[in-house]
Image 1 (cartoon, rainbow, N blue to C red):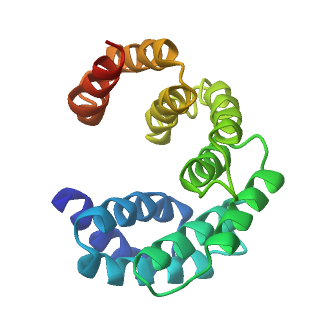
Image 2 (spheres, rainbow, N blue to C red):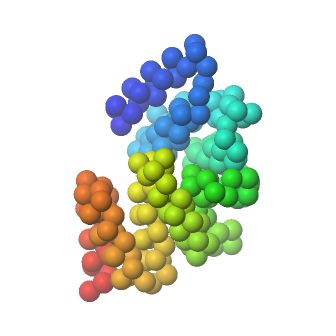
Length: 199
């Protein structure tokens, strides 16, 4: 996290002078999400900065990405108790997919929003459909090394688990670990969980 923070702080200072790029948002999104899990007070200024950067780049972002990132802003602010727009956040996630239906990032983001949404607003089966569409698109060499790819593949396994298909969840988890043996959450937490419920 310290390396991630240093990169974002350095990039933000540099880009304030030379102009923002969408690449920084991609990193800020992941950092804010991770930091909110460990230190909400420290996350607060980064969420504020993320919102400012999203708004600044609104007209220059790839199609669907403004809606995707603004949805994330609303989720982050909800977690900080600074906004209360869970339905609007999910609506923006769906809008992102409508605008960019062949973009694996919008598909993965919306699928994740649906995965965590309360039952009246989303479903694991709908999330799985979007993740599987993203999985196919992530095979393109330009996306293959994107860090969202292993995340999407992990969530596919979790969707199968939620559906009661433990065998498929195990198959996919083991395949992902063969490709990413240092994926510590999968190796140390999720795979033991699946093995325990598969007994």
